[in-house]
Length: 516
Image 1 (cartoon, one colour):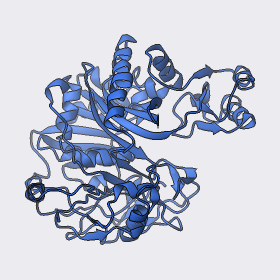
Image 2 (cartoon, rainbow, N blue to C red; image 1 turned 120 degrees about the horizontal axis):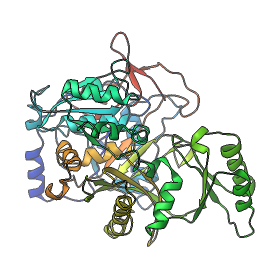
Image 3 (cartoon, rainbow, N blue to C red; image 1 turned 90 degrees about the vertical axis):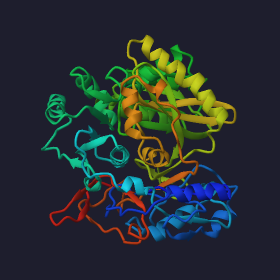
């Protein structure tokens, strides 16, 4: 995972001098490979920070007024491709044209200052943190937490080959710590002096890992099992929206196929219509049915064919919403104080031009231009505040990150879904832009102290993540293939941040693809 920043404003001389003072000697990034996702995060501005200048392709300026949805940055042929080929190709997409200023250069440079390079590899007496998960999101979390001066050590279970290379970090394989065994996680934290656990995946939150930790006095960043139903059950989420007046699509929920089919066959039903499996289905449990036969097939496969097992034991049928999708992130502390983070847009279709099968995410950028200050204010007042208040009234107060999936159509803003954790790959671009201390922020959320944290600082420039995947992904693909990251992507003179997802180390230390 890498991130790219394209400065769209002409900085003043004073501002350039301030930036130059902040940018120190770039440190070597030890990431050598890419897994299921390669997020190539670059930061560009008019200030040279030790990086090389990459001219933007002329296509970007020719399409500056084109669509703002984003690009998947597919690697032609489906294999791995070097950054110097893939990145300009992505910026040339009309969907990313709004990130580029005509006749401007992008400067690829390090975000690590001289002050930060002096940090010890492992602290003594600092905060010890456990990060649960092994994707690109968790790599970004480990990277952000380890940069804090208060951080003594970061454990990550199960992690990946890239996470193992981060400073202050200890990787724990499944044989070392099985995070499905909550008692084992608690015992590990007590034995190793871990005082904070950051839970990345939604499955562990829905399973109640945060509850097990808090019951033993260990800080957990993430909601309780009850509050995690906001993502774990589409019916729960829609019912909360209806009860507390949160704008969302009209819907009905069903656990019997005949009742669902009768609802679809009403004369007043309009198409397209959306059929969703109620539970967690790895992002695959949503069908946008263009007509009645498609909708009937979706209902029958979920309720009768058990396509998604228990996750499809009930379904939500809701009206189709048109507009532009965006994601908005908010952090909520133990006392119910909510503070906005930022917006992002991710892109799931496998190929360029928003075509091809859906994936776990082929790229993202932040901020999302469609999320204006007006939209932010509306989301906070009409969505976040009633949601946080409503969950407390329902007896399941929320603490952690709320990821609101929005549909924006002019002045109309509605909620598509809520997630109870950072998105992936959105997390990578959000944390790449964050200038505040991530560990301090997470501790404040756990301790109910966001009121005292102060304003979260962000880099003004946007960040872009480009994903690179194995040949054939998301369909059938060969596993265990060698990932050889060219030195042009990451070197002493030309650093770029690469986050790993689903990678592992081979017997000789080489990086192998363990997933897509």
